[in-house]
Length: 328
Ligand code: TXA
Ligand code: MG
Image (tube, rainbow, N blue to C red):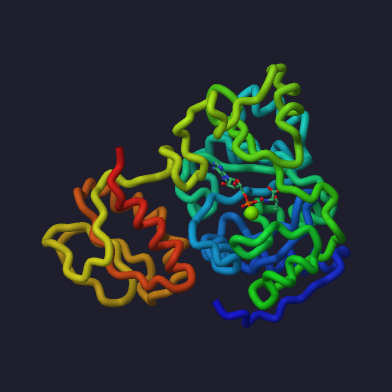
């Protein structure tokens, strides 16, 4: 992606936060300080805006993102909270802890935020600027760390500017982050709490709050020596039942077609077009819903027309490649 935007770096006063909220409401990107690291925020309900997050970061994969909200009530509206989840939220929110919970059906969060998963990662940040921006927007904000993919997380506005100038509309400067490392991610979507990523709150503190001797970890040998470590590889990751054929120029008669661009060969089978105009942002925003729609049609095979590999196309093709891979 070219660095073509004029990125404004503003001291995060009330006027700047109000302007940032307008940017987000119109589908733009704002880097905001949180107590852990700076986050790259967009309207979590707006698939095109969320696609821009991946584009700006140059992420070659659609990792699921954390949704930031103002408080526990807002969080309960998006996900289902077990007793354990409630206890952790009461103990550590607002603060550097993210809870992975089952997503409520029908909530207005883009499928791209969850990478098609049925769970949602939610956090209530404590930083006054993040809180002010969330309140001013009045909606959940998707925000990964505001760095280019593969770079370290930014803890000052200058770090963000070095990575993302020309790729985001605004950087809110709220000074250096106090915690300086990312939030602790805990999966409370199942029967036992599971540490997915160590972070700003120690695993011992979490175990303590739950009255447990220690917290099980997703990559501890005790849990499962073969457990995949990246959420992109988790078994729960959405995979269609239909077989998927990539880079198809001539689909079989009756085969379902996942199209991209204006030219779509007719097969008589169901067709979903990721973007009739060949826009990769639109294609990314539509990807997970499109796979579900075709899968629900009961087809046995989905032919995917060629999708260019540059920019967001890399992450789109990565996801399709994994959906096409043989499953256990
Ligand atoms: O402190 C932080 O957490 C910062 C600030 C900006 O909030 N954000 C952050 O986001 O570090 P990111 O995207 O760099 O990392 C999000 C982590 C990843 O490890 C991702 O795999 C995990 O959260 N995650 C998100 N949704 C998930 C889900 N549904 N299930 C499992 N893991 C999930
Ligand atoms: Mg990160």
